[in-house]
Amino acid sequence: MSGSLQGKAAVVTGGGSGIGLAVAQRLAREKAAVAVFDLDATAAKAAADSIAADGGTAVALAVDVADRDAVDQGMADVRRRLGPVTVLVNNAGKEGFRRLLDISVEEWNRLLAVNLTGTFHCCQAAVPDMVAAGWGRIVNIASSSAHSGQPLMTHYVASKAGVIGFTKALALELGPQGITVNTIPPGFIDTPMTRRNEARGRLGGTVDEHAARTPVRRAGTPEDIAATCAFLASDEAGYITGQVIGVNGGRNT
Ligand code: NAP
Image (cartoon, rainbow, N blue to C red; front, top):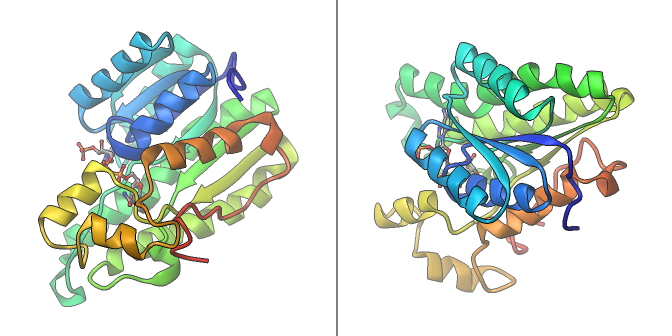
């Protein structure tokens, strides 16, 4: 598939780490010009530098996806520097582990603001470019926990279930305009987020123990998700929209 996104500009949110970083690098290898949005400006710049070192084109922007003005300004900046944004991967996410009765309203609101409203903000900011082009690809990163449920994560799971519903509805709305919208709910991917949670004893076992219980007998890699994103962003995937594409080694079927 190398070069399938030649001439396209792509935005990857949360592209400074883990899954988002691998997605940004993979889309750049498909010849997209990539904008890395991340809360962490240093991580975003390192991601863009790694893409440039690999011969790709990338820019880094410090953007909190929960901040509508920052998203609008960031998207306008990308449009000026790289051209119309016709590929969008909404990956930025924040996890939370707390009993329902201990979740503060502020924590609930922040988590929903990043995971769900951030996806809404980025879609609203990028879709006009896709409509004008008569072509677009949106991939929203949800979570397998939205299928299975997960104790101590009501806020996180609710936000990711919202992303799945949002994806299905938007796909129906934008299909006639040549824009596909799909969601990948990853299951157990070895990323900095996962290792952080392992270190804090939040996973119910180590990464290796989870890998041993996974049907394909390994943890997922960010590259597993990136490969699926690259396919969904390609022309070849034009008849796939409104779908929930599980990438989870068989942990959820
Ligand atoms: P990660 O390594 O923590 O990377 C997430 C990136 O998103 C970080 O660079 C983070 O920046 C950034 N970010 C967080 N909040 C943001 C915001 N408001 N605006 C812009 N960027 C923001 O996590 P990951 O494991 O790669 O997860 C990526 C996505 O996959 C998330 O949506 C997560 O919920 C989802 N997911 C992951 C797994 C898994 O097994 N890893 C499973 C299911 C779903 P900071 O580091 O500065 O916060």
